[in-house]
Amino acid sequence: MLLSDFASFGVVSASAAGHDGPVTYTKGGCEGIASYPPSEDYNSGKAAIGTGPYKFVSFVSGDRITLARFDDYWGEKPHWEEIVIRPITNDGARVAALLAGDVDIIEKPPVQDLETLRAEDGVDVVQGASSRVIYLHFDHQGEPSPGIGGTDGKNPLKDVRVRKAISLAIDRPLIVDRIMGGLAVPARQLVPDFMRGVDPEIGLEEANLEEAKKLLAEAGYPDGFTLVLGTPNDRYINDSKIAQAVAQMLTRAGIKTDVDAMTKSVFFSRRNKYEFSLYLAGWGASGAGMASPLRALVASQNKDKGLGGTNRGRYSNPVLDAEIETALATVEPEAHDAALRRASKIVVDDVAILPLHYEVTPWALRKGLTITPRADQHTVLTTVRPVD
Image 1 (tube, rainbow, N blue to C red):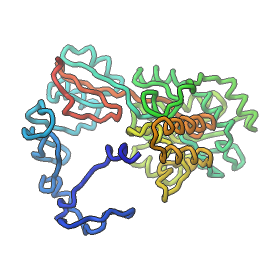
Image 2 (image 1 turned 90 degrees about the vertical axis):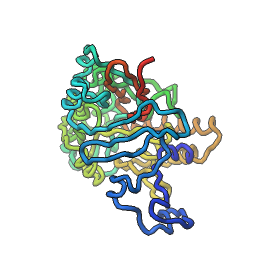
Image 3 (image 1 turned 30 degrees about the vertical axis):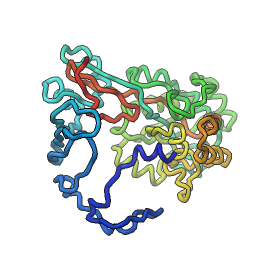
Image 4 (image 1 turned 135 degrees about the vertical axis):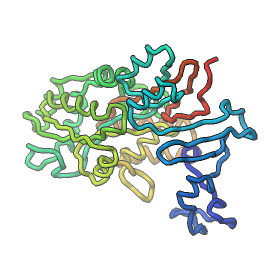
């Protein structure tokens, strides 16, 4: 997956650190470079480097970044003479800036405002499928597990029947329709079907409340248990609203669920400390396709092999690990993809992690402009152009 990974690496040259000699690349980092320039040098442009179609002009913290066209660019001539990027973190203010003509394009317009924006004479909305899956991650190891009550200290999430019951209790299409306003696609696997490694034989699962209750009873929880679902409230599209919907569905199945929502900075800090028995998060797959979430989210934690880095559920399955490592070491495309498909089936059958949906990303633009949507959800302003 090396070439695929290179596409997402950020590169800082050794010469930017004032180093002109050879550099040795080791597992621990780059040897021979004592230090890199401070942030102020990058912010001022003194240390800015690049090979792109625009040149750095200025950066004002919290206000704007200004770029100018580089006429000697090696590729297609950039369309715009100047690009100004403004951070507007408030949803309402971002929409208002577009409607007032202060900006030409905004990313992440709120779902509830999309119909209003589509009805505006001077505005167009462009949207595209993304590779980001929104999922639920189980605590597969802790006992007792934080946030679980009514089980005499046992962790019911370690039982595959309980995990299957949770999956059956959740109506994914309803969440897509009511919460996401159609800006999502129901998910069963960790990447959408336009990416490599998807098993076409694995279909979507229909919600079945009675079957969910039956499985809970078989697992020894006929009266259910209590559960706290952790979630960010400012990281993904409607993240806390999705969590509330999931909580209501699980409660109907007998698992009385409360939601603990917080800012993303607090959430990820707590998640990394294993403070949730069940949490909602998202993963945007790279060009590696299914290999991207498999090696990060469900491979057994193994720092030496670079596996399981975001496996905060501590799921571990030697059979799955073997398939993932086979895929990562196989260059021949068909054999590589076959290993990924086998791994995906293991994840689905064991409910190692629970995909909910893939996000669909919207942008709102001034009438007469368009943008090329990207699966990685990045707003690449060189793709913003007048409509032909």
